[in-house]
Amino acid sequence: MQMEPISVWEGSGRRRLLTSVENTALFLLNKWPAEDKGSKAHLAAQIAVLQALEGEIPPEGARAVFEAAAERVQILAGPIERPTHNLPAHVARPWDMPWAKKRRRRKP
Image (cartoon, rainbow, N blue to C red):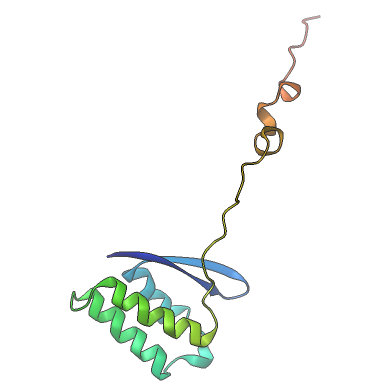
């Protein structure tokens, strides 16, 4: 089941983008911080994700509960920032510039 993407910190500074209820359930089981496993927020997120998997609540409801639990543990990463302007061509695609083209060699 697809849901609105949510970005969380995983391990040592790696960001993970969760886009489905199934991936969120796996994250709760395998990647949740060990010091917070079994807390009320963690259990509430697990229950909400299981209910979403069974179709009892919409995926966005499970996402909201997961987001609150992730924010409590401080692993919520926020949206990925995109550039506000386009890069010049010589920076964005240097291989496409005239000076980067390979020259033909003469046969001896």
